[in-house]
Image (cartoon, rainbow, N blue to C red; front, side):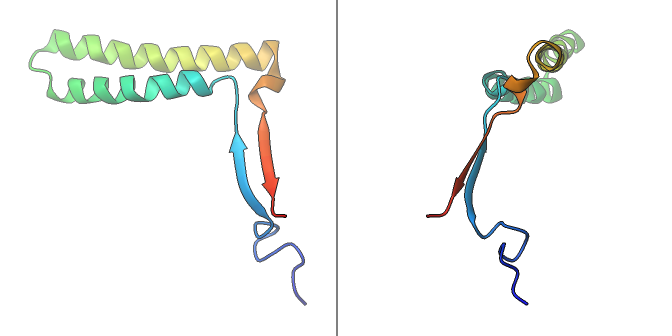
Length: 88
């Protein structure tokens, strides 16, 4: 018997799934800052510079967690945006 939903439970009919939440801009801004800070932590010559860039990384992670929990409590629907395009 052929599975009417494609090989893996419907994946054959779905072309593209995009997820857009209120946190996407914060995450996209954080990625390059996190990357540069992580490289600076690895290659910084002195301890103070390493601690400063490590503090930036921790602040970014805390900002993302605080924003997530804020919207999880205040407006959880803004964390659940999802678009699905079906094949014609």
